[in-house]
Amino acid sequence: MQDVWQYPDLSEEILPLNANFQFQKTMSEPKEPAKIGLWTSTSLVIGNMVGSGVFLLPAGIAAFGGIGLFGWIGSSIGAIILALLFGRLSKLLKNSLGGPYAYTREGLGDFAAFLVAWGYWISIWCTNAAITVAMISYLTVFFPILETDPVVAIVTGLGIIWFLTWINTRGVKNAGYVQVITTILKLIPLIAVSFAGLFYIDFDNYSPFNLKGESYFAAISTTVTLTLFAFLGLESATIPSGDIHEPEKTIPRATMIGTLFTILLYVVGSFAVMGMIPAAVLKDSNAPFADAAAIMWGESARYWVAAGAVISTFGALNGWILLQGQMPMAAARDKLFPGIFKRENSKRTPAAGIVISSILISLLMMMNYREGLTDTFNFMVLLTTLTVLVPYLFSATAYGVLLLQDKYWKRNSISNLLIAGLAFVFSLWAILGSGQETVYWGFIAILAGIPFYVWMKRKQDPN
Image (cartoon, rainbow, N blue to C red; front, side, top):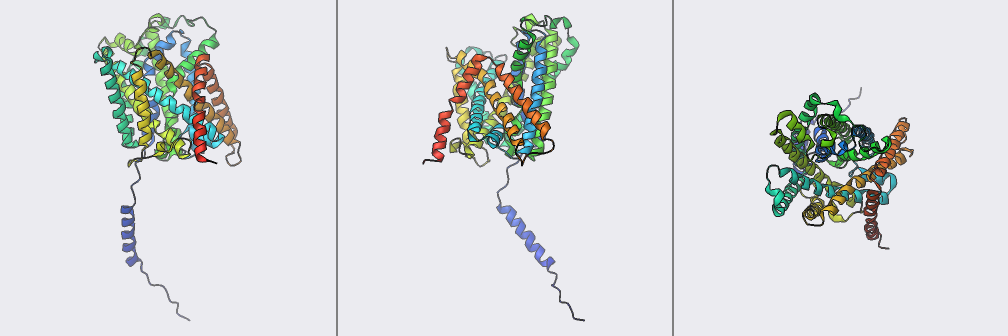
């Protein structure tokens, strides 16, 4: 029988060399930036939704009477539908940086995607300016000079904006830590007032049921649009998808958990506050939760709620500054925004885009303290709701278009098409509820970006 020659076993000699090679390779490769997980993503969703509005909304819907609570129910159902929409889109289009922008571009093309990015970007820096002003107004409880000295107020506002801008340029992980801490701190007074207030309810305070005397449909439609403002930001986790661990799993969970928790907080809180304070008094209140806290625990409780409002606005501002660089960066990578917006610093953050947006925020914030421009500024802030609803509408349309393509069609596509259709109808209803004047000016603001789009397209194809 012929001997069979076998290769000598060199594994013991090769293994140390291979291990050393792997070690050297690891040392030479740049370290990947830390990514955020489920709870940080959830805090981003909750933190961006729970801002300054929740502290004032019970007063806003009290002007309509007890029927205002049905507005919360309607907007809550719409928020769940939108959360399902963005959760499904994040699974369908994994690692799509820019959220609504990326989904719209995939389904509807460059032009529609540009309109989404343009409108969303405008809404972010206008909202951030409003949040800054709201934070300063809450700080007047502790520092009255902010109410009497515009210069001190402006300097304080600028200091807050640029401190959070610096935090967000240090990396998404650092911004995430701030978001988790501020979200926890802001929720404590809201949860305390909301659930403790259930024991102080007087059901006579919910009447008259329809205070304005409009038709039930008209009153509910208006309050749905009004309360929907509090849910803007539910799509927050979809935008920095490239910085999220396992985005196809994390984003849908974070979006739904954050939305459901926020719904519970909003509905219970409004129900409690409206049950504690008569509608005729509540509709003129500048601090509904603070008034409710004073009823339960005395006048000193106002300061605790005011502190919660300051933390709430601080956390919301941090979350939105995080996003203000992500959306234009996604568009810039596709050559629909100038290239400066896609520049990243050593922390892998779009620092240039964040800084440019913060400059615009600073200018708008300062305009609020100039005599004669306050009304104009406030009206610009009202347009943010509309300019966010338009991306929702486009995202729903894009989802429907994608589902009808062969490569995306699956057994559950019929139910997903139903979600897309419901999200479209709800977004359209909310847009109509914004009022003719708001829709008119919002339409103008979005269309104003078309020449900018033409210029960018010209740069792509000079011939």
